Image (cartoon, rainbow, N blue to C red; front, side, top):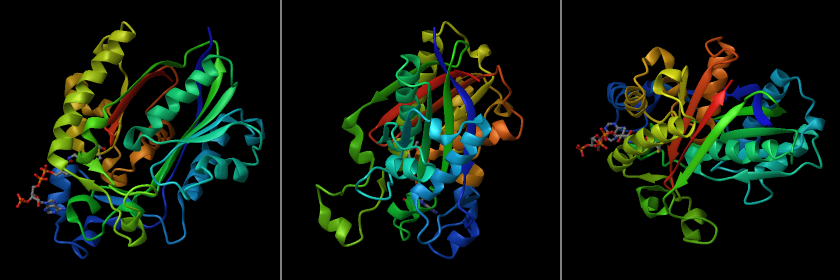
Length: 322
Ligand code: ACO
């Protein structure tokens, strides 16, 4: 059969860094509180005028270079974001134009922090079924634009960035399986309760921001990620011992550690970037993957378990033979 294999990865972070010390001067918080509760030490923030498409383009170019693929040969672009540049056209179409890849299908996927795993699962179907010989999959966010910088309970948690992978059809694995879920009943635990078609006044007045019940999100996230890890291994007839690397969504080091414990995986086998990137939503998994591929930790042949959880609620996983 045909698999979708990851041929190259890329990542990009805006230059501007915001440390916990910087945040101490903006809201009533402390480096100590942020580090012990979340593991975050700093985050990157897009400059004025720097957009999601800008970050996506840099990450995409790096992934294409790593895969040695000319963007003009792309068959598909899927981009996950919660913070698109515009209402429309999609950020994927903007990216396609910048890459000079006109003609192939290009669209955005919205599943908040699970966005990249959703986008990867969609692109994988195109490649597996022969609808595309290759695909560019991107997670890109400027989450800083939807944060209330006066709300200490949310503004310390997030950062901006982009990550990308290039998938190619191959007779050898490849993505082994993907698992996607959603439960819309939890929407008000983590949301921006305004948009174009509802409560637009909040958008106009500049008060459409992320709102979160952190402790409740934490509990559901830990429980749900434990379940999806089991589901993923069972579906492939594999055991915990087969997993070489856990590449989790980077929201909080305590959630990451709970998932690693569930897998009996030592933290040396878990890719952690939350300390330096904070939570970059849809960009967090591909950014973490790219970091560990480029520093040589992840090698060809390794078995990777990616997982994510986010607003919706949405959650998902991908098991990948790298
Ligand atoms: N600095 C100092 N104090 C703060 C801050 C801050 N930045 N933020 C909140 N506090 C205070 C609260 O006001 C509260 O004070 P009180 O006890 O006097 O009322 C106290 O700290 C404890 O607040 P909790 O919310 O109970 O703290 P908790 O230990 O649950 O940690 C956190 C909060 C870090 C948000 C945690 O619940 C969490 O990580 N939840 C998961 C949410 C998440 O990761 N969301 C991201 C999107 S979803 C995802 O990606 C998984």
